[in-house]
Image 1 (cartoon, helix red, strand yellow):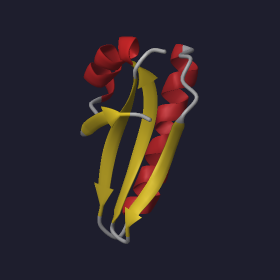
Image 2: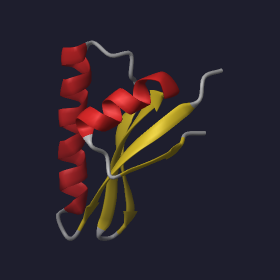
Image 3: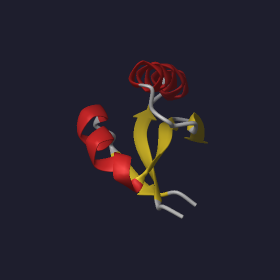
Image 4: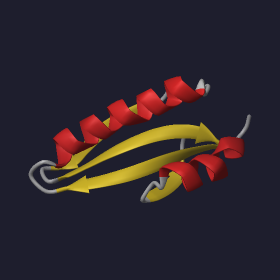
Length: 78
């Protein structure tokens, strides 16, 4: 099975959760426009003032999407 990478965008502050949720909408729009086979695009609240938006891509897609979408960080997805 191919390695999967979680591309992550961090949003902090009182509006962090709403911003992460909104960012997910943009990521989904991009995936639809580009017709990419990506199904995991979500947001998660990590703390009261720290939320993330993320998408899971395969290793082959990671470099191109990283350079285009500029995530703040990434990690292996399990």
